[in-house]
Length: 466
Image (cartoon, rainbow, N blue to C red; front, side, top):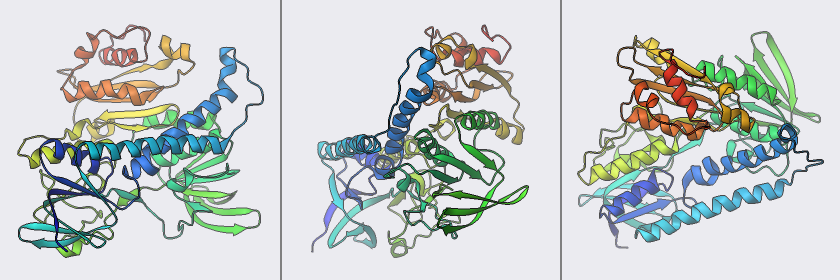
């Protein structure tokens, strides 16, 4: 069978892969994209970012009806949960967005192939890729296959009692007692969903704080809020083993106070993700993963195998959809000879609990570790008119800046709609802005964004409303 020839073959149709394919097509390359799932969009659209946010929003509305609207003078009696309808709404959103990606492929004349792509080596200066009984060839191949949930040796996923985040997004009923192993982003978001819907949720985290990579002050405030919402949280705790009994799952925990046991109905393991390279045929092109299970790349995202590139979760850096998308654009533009670059110092991170947590730039711990001088300014949402009016005034904004120049080094937010507020912070940081730039920018009143301006002013003790 003759090869189908392209300028570029993209393996993986997630936020990194499909964005790279579109940008490459815009730049004049002939592009093929290969996806082993039946739908495009990768983990993010199918079983990660989008369905989780749909359930977070739905569960938040349910919690508001039951717990918060009374404060506003709105009394609703006997609100009930229709989980099937909630799940159907989630699936509808996923279907619409994945269908939209298919439409973008057609619009940009990108050839789509379904199945497991396998690197088959190089011949005639072109990389060969097989997809089932189909043979493709291209001068360049981009690997963008994303990552999988880490499965612990003593907690194998079975989809019933020990579940992954993907399973947790599709439960047919609310578990009475849910144990979440891992106090990171995924564990806290999924724990929040099922807690709001009525589950007794316990979170265990081996490290001394939730969201281990976040600012400790943000993590502490979030922990207090989650406890008030009904979640039980155990830090410095490890799940040693589980035993299935007639009364439920008996989980044995190792804590600072010794061994403890608790009973639950499901165990959600959310201890991180690892790069997905299985079945790609890396050995056929003499490619090996590094100690982290990822691929090393140069500034053009080229691996050790000429003509084969990698982005997203397959390479170093935070495993974030928007990071992969930025790399996809830059990869395509560099392939076209442009000098694009990703600003890795200005990639925001967000946890979609309530309150939300968002950060961009340097942390206090990192600045201290590197002996970089800084000053900090903080403004609490409890002094924000908009936050008080909305009934969501937990949290604060923290701005870190260089003492001499006022240049912003990092901005950290825990509070209402932090996921949206972080965009302004990222923009200012990306352009090398200072606390003065924020101070002289007129912010509409009353808005939550005013808290960013006040925190910037607070760096030099000039906040008006603090």
